[in-house]
Structure formats: structure tokens, C-alpha cells
Image (tube, rainbow, N blue to C red):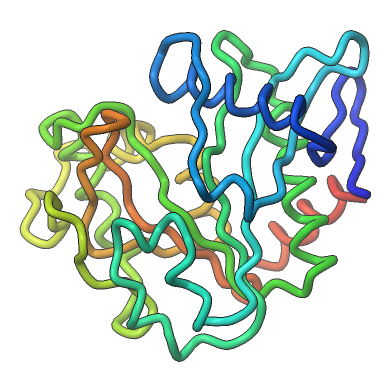
Length: 241
């Protein structure tokens, strides 16, 4: 079983209904801003990773990982609810969808996301994963909030055959967005998770989806494991070890 300890923190897989419930409660707090339970049919198909304090077990972060055996299984993913993944059908090898990544409000310890990525790296290597993908969210469904940040993604749009087609009812196409007046500020406005994906060589869809239910705007994001820069791969595996 996956267990990684770093100082006061530990990453591990959820082991039963109570662990899952804790993750769903943190997700609801992070994505909806209120106490509650965020649950859907995809949870049963996923492994759930918890990052918690060793002493006391307070939950600091969580995310879920769904194994996708091959391209034929892509339609069972959460991303397929919003994106037409047919153009990715030519991809081969094991894949994983990473989703619902969140960090408890008020927690700024950089070891929290580091440990989460260490756990993800351990899973990817153990399963021989070729592609990681998911929906990366911006808080707030109003596109006007994110124009410069979306525009700065244009150089990172995946080529045809590596990016999904449109499926959602409300989308924002990246092409045609005015270039940001301050590219560095626009890059800084990206969600931290998305900046991490881009640093790993990640690519995004050519459009963003407006999700009114969660009050988010998100882009499909994919990282081909073989294309992760060697220095970044070594750093991730050092954390995982």
C-alpha cells in the first residue's frame, strides 16, 4: 500500500468508507465553500489519496485517481462529461485521471502539495502510466474573471489528436482571446495545480468549460509521462522515494 511520510505529514490511500467520507467532506468545503459531502458515481471507481497530519490525522489535502486501462475506457472518466475525448482514442497504454484535488483552507505548508505529488508519482510509476489527465479548475464560473490567465494558455494548447473536442453547453474558446497585458501576472493568476502541470510539460484543451454547478471554469489538462522534463521527473521521484 502507498504510504509516504515527510515530517509531520503522511500520504496514504483511503482505506474504507470513513476515509472516503472525510475526503468528500473536504472536497465539499473546498469546492462549494460550505460543510457537506461532495460525492458522485465516479468515487466508486477511484483510489482516493489523503495527505494528513501524522499526529491526530487532520486531513490537509486529498485527490482521487481513476485508472483508465486504454483509450476505449476514456468515456467512463469524469472529464468525458464535459469534453469529447474521441480525438484521444489513438493513444495507447495505461492512463489515470486525477481529479478533485484540494487543500484544506488556510493551509500554506508547501510540503502538502509536495507530498501529494510524491504520492501521485509513486502511483504513476507503479502502474506504468503513460498519460495523466483531468479537469483543472479556476474558481468562479464567470469567464471575465480569467481572461488574461486563459489567454496565457494558448502556447500550451495540445495539437490535434492530443486534445478533446467540445461537448459542454457553455465553453470559452482560447483562440481569439486578447493577449495579456502582463504575461507574468497572467501566469501567476493560473491555479497552482495548473502551473505544476505546465511545468511538467502538460498541455491543455483549446477551450475552457463553464461549470455552473461548482461555480468553476476548467480546462482539460494532460501530461504525457515520457515528456516530463528529466530534471522535474528526477525531483518528483526523489520525493516519492
